[in-house]
Length: 147
View 1 (cartoon, rainbow, N blue to C red):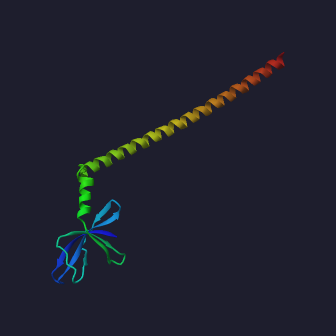
View 2: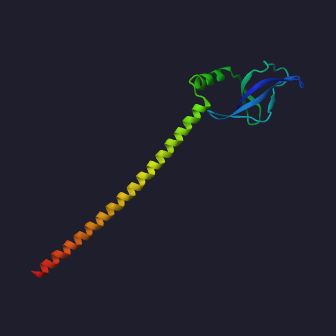
View 3: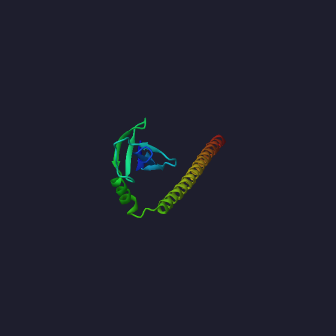
């Protein structure tokens, strides 16, 4: 699993550690880690303190990959922040999409209702046609019998 972490010095153990800040839930979905979570880098591993890194952990919690997060952060800035995609803008877009969805649902319901009404009218017309045919056939039989 991929995490965003910050390098910190653990003074008590005299070694560096990673403070896990966020975890990737899906491709473009991250969750902040609310609790204090740390991974020791081990003696002899020195990195710049406060450095942001992307760290991939195995299911057992071992570091499988560790990269500087600078390019990742710059990509976020370029993709989301340089075009003015503020949280407010995204919220407004989500609300507009929900309104469209509700409007389309109402339109679909209206179309379904109209379709049912048309089908009922078609059946009424067919029944009326059948009734007229029976009347005509009955009328013709009466005329033929009367001549």
